[in-house]
Image (cartoon, rainbow, N blue to C red; front, side, top):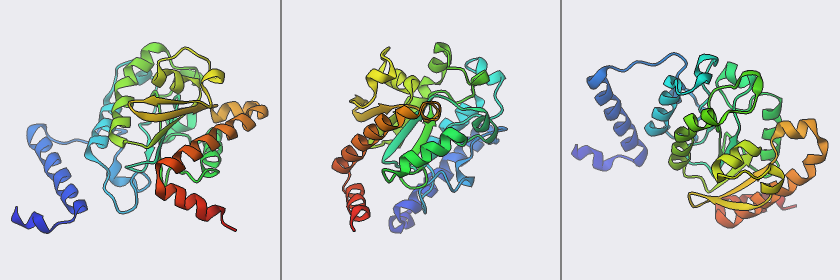
Length: 250
């Protein structure tokens, strides 16, 4: 054990993860559930050179095993989320669609492609500085809005993920995540473009990308919301502010 004194923080974290998994195995055997979201095999989940946190992995395992509501009986795969370990921003959507249900990844359909462009416009991405997840982790049939009992069943997963990720800010896309995190009944048109706090973290809401695909007139207000988030992030994080200044330089 004395040799651990010379280890890097990353090496110590790997040892801790190994010991914790070994303890799990000795207690009850370790099995990978069918459809489990396995962080160690997903390079797009962790920041380059970093190990994914064991706690986040356990949340994903619990999501894969969850049968807390009726959505468990109709899902193909659970969709716990994807992104970097210590994100600048956590992006929260409503729930998986058909393509997300098939792939087990959030925002991979047409709305996801638009979300990628929206984030890129303010120098954000799931590969570098964001984590993207949904309020509910299983697809509601026919992409309907999640029912209150379904949102309640996934609530502990969502709050635990945000606590573990410790983002500098939260971006809610659509009314369901905004209403859920803010415990509000206001429409998205009233909630968007304003900063709130969730567990001490600045939170801003805007329209869901799928709404923009249906209604082009929503693109302008959404861009205004994203610029507000960009300005707040620049005030919160010097690294982000420096990157913004460099990218804007002639």
